[in-house]
Picture 1 (cartoon, rainbow, N blue to C red):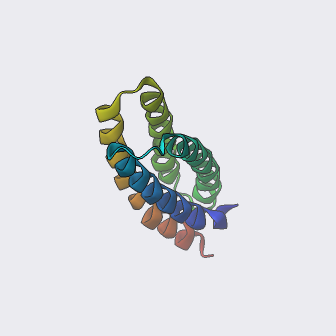
Picture 2 (picture 1 turned 135 degrees about the vertical axis):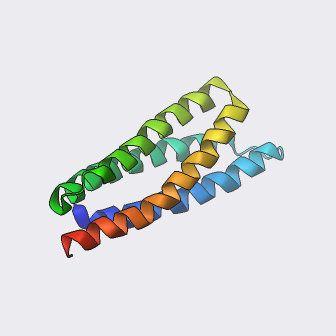
Picture 3 (picture 1 turned 90 degrees about the horizontal axis):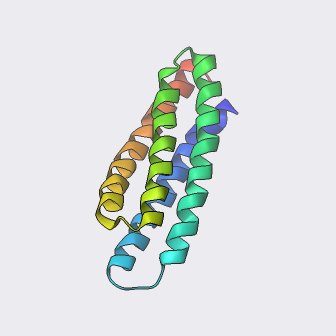
Length: 119
């Protein structure tokens, strides 16, 4: 499970880039809201699995701080879904940008953790 951490981090980045494109299209008036919504919920599930992988990898590497990073991203994703459901557009956009930054930072964190395991 620990070795899945890096690929999961990259999947999160790829899906978030797609979410960003869909969000821009939505702001332009293109009707992709349902796809954006479903993909966001699926992304939250991927982040949940990444958090489990981060826990296992962090335990093996002796670096449990990585779980804080990914766990924090999971909490932000849940808040993001709630903001989207409430129709709070600008807070949703601002938090989305912060999530993108945090997720891009998750990749090198995952790589360092796996390297510390020696895998």
